[in-house]
Image 1 (cartoon, one colour):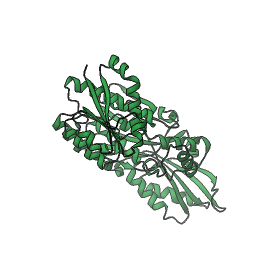
Image 2 (image 1 turned 90 degrees about the vertical axis):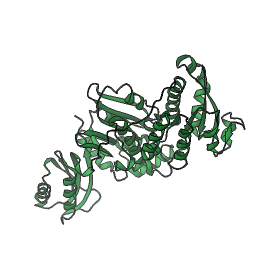
Image 3 (image 1 turned 45 degrees about the vertical axis):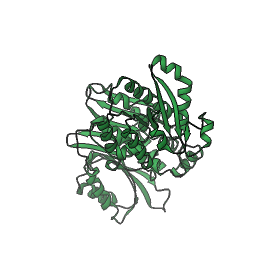
Image 4 (image 1 turned 180 degrees about the vertical axis):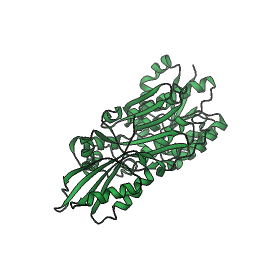
Length: 432
């Protein structure tokens, strides 16, 4: 059995976890997986990590390119993150003919086409399980066990930070600002939470999932993205009253005329499996023509979960390396168009604050009718607590309609004298 020598770029908590797993389970992996892994080089700008992780001065460096170019390194693990130097390092490793393991969702969602084409040309294996579900094994089943299916839908809760925040808002009636402060104090949210709360992390992940599921290139720029900053505890409460839960969903549908891909807060029925995914847990739900509906569930975030996924990729890459197999990530040959959000057809929840006057409801109905938006239900929810006397809240639920028409309705509603505020609009996903 050949010892496969590993170089790790980035020795933070995930990189340290990878070293710990390999050291702890090396003999087990030799027996059960038929591969012998050894970390021989590591790079990081924080030199204190070298001694902490047991790397000698000969093994450690602050120059990541030294690791990539070391002829003693068989496989490169990129854990630096970002789309700058990480891209250069990954491309350099591929050029050197070395398999690459990465957890870098932003890199793959932005430069995936360039990376995979180069890997294909060089016959180099690229693996990236940790880039989407953390410790949840979803990419491997998607590209292997489920290849006998045509996948028509993939969606999920793929950001643990926002799911934790929405769970707290739902269970305790807290505001966005309150739960964000707690999430930051607990280490679930960064000091700058933009990537999480504005949906960009989830968008990068669904771009990767959609590319693999539909064999068609989807990039981060293709994903219509809306985060949870403007979500109110009031809307979560109203959703519960009518049997729905609000989740930040990453959604991709393969339709006859293209790919519908988006991230936004979504109302889903309380009875659906995704509605019960709470806290920092993640889940990916997909539909195949033969397998039906399948859900992958687990801790999507955390150093241990990510390190576990990286080592799983390492084992599979080492197997392929030993046998001379070429396993490439996404061929993405179908070139399906990305459908604009304006063409989306779904149901909508709208909350308005209006003046409690005779004839106002008729005016509202005229606006909806003007654009052919059919109302399923409407409900007055009493006085508007944050406004003066004489203002009330109204909730509207529509039948299935087109996004462009719904946006036209919202634009016209704000022009009515007795509409104080269009407080919120949420999409209601059809999960039948």
